[in-house]
Image 1 (cartoon, rainbow, N blue to C red):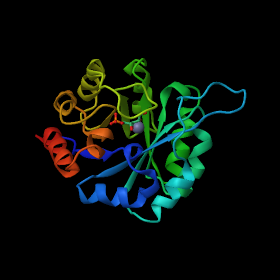
Image 2 (cartoon, rainbow, N blue to C red):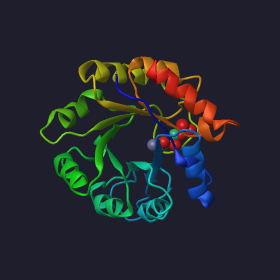
Image 3 (cartoon, helix red, strand yellow):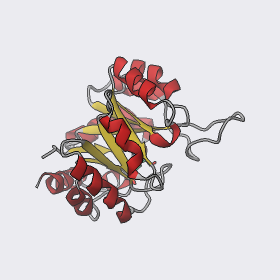
Length: 227
Ligand code: DX5
Ligand code: ZN
């Protein structure tokens, strides 16, 4: 029912050639470009959300100058509210924050994201129960996508966790038209499990960038979701 969105994760691209990597993926049939924003917290405030450091708003802004593509931004930061304005200005299309760090301010966050012209989404780590996102979907200012992490966030190239598919099934049953995104370990060998559980937005980093024919991998995943 819900159209497939195939979103190569630029985390697996050659960052020194980001614009050409992006256009290569679009030529190969990508719908979205998935941008993993990670920040290391260097002061004494709560520990960082993930033990890695990737890209931020300045890089999104540079890429935006080269493409009109939907930039699906996944914020793995402890303080997503601080990034709404910079990401909006940089040209992000979707802004997906983690529920684990937004329990007290998600309403303000969603409102801010929308006011900057971005599409709000909420992500959850493997250990977080799916019930936690229900209020964000059902409120009067709802998120428009739920990202179910299928690995521990932080790095590309990890193994898909099939036990997360129960979350996707429950969500799909409850919300037939919701965009449900899966992220981590997706590729030709795991797509069918994810698609039949009900995921329609598919993030894939290493399986796409590591393929000799990324277009084939993308079209295979699209078929699995759409059939
Ligand atoms: C991990 C990121 C993912 C990652 C996926 O924290 O959120 O987007 O790039 O990479 P693969 O597809 O290689 O698991
Ligand atoms: Zn991601």
